[in-house]
Length: 326
Image (cartoon, rainbow, N blue to C red; front, side, top):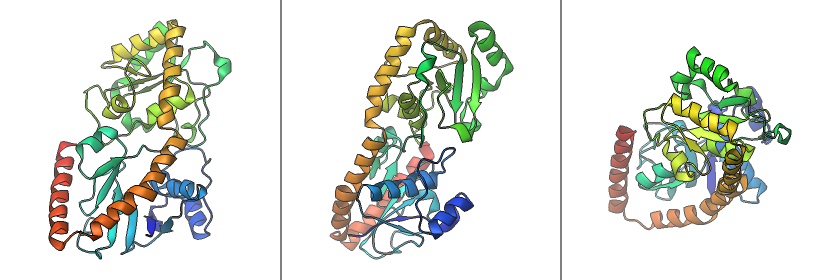
């Protein structure tokens, strides 16, 4: 059964990546800096599967046969479930977007989201490419705290002068919002803070990638109440949770003063990340491509017209509810 990854040319994020596609050259996965969703979820996945000997296609036009995987955001909103032949099986990769009602299966990047959204499965986003871990020579040093990501995904309290002044004057720490071209570089970072807000929102559509990267880098992590962190990690064991700026400061003080505690967090994180590193994620994809999708596609072909119609009525309802509860 033919399995394809669908990636329209217009969604390639740069001329360099577009040229690589047109010349049938793989984009170097070690490329540093910001990785767009289309690269992480489609091109990178397809390339790593190909390197592992798993045959799939990368296509620019949406096929009408076989199994097709596509980012939800690249699919036409007018796409209908009855638009394709009965042997067409569509898998939408939701990422930060919304599940598409015409998809037969949704891939989501948050395990808690998968537990709530019917006809979905969880696959973690790939860790940051070419990640540089914290330098071992820093040893007990604790001077720099950083946030890795778009500033819009950081709680507004961290932008206040008073908070950063308190951090410097009381704890002798500097706080940095690391630019996209250095999202891979943890070499001089002693702690990571990644809190979107202090509202206790579950953030069901967001991944735990920042936590994975900190684990891989050997850096203690302070996060919010994101469901992805809580599902994939163990609060107080391999990362810390803060409900207020004051609690962030308390955690940083303890990390600075208690090296043994800090070391335990880092060690536990290095064990936890084994389930989410590149090798483990590749194994998840191999099982999906080789076992799960062929089985589901064959089961779909055996369904009657009435069963298919009922399936998509339910899908539209699930997607509507998911959007409203976000």
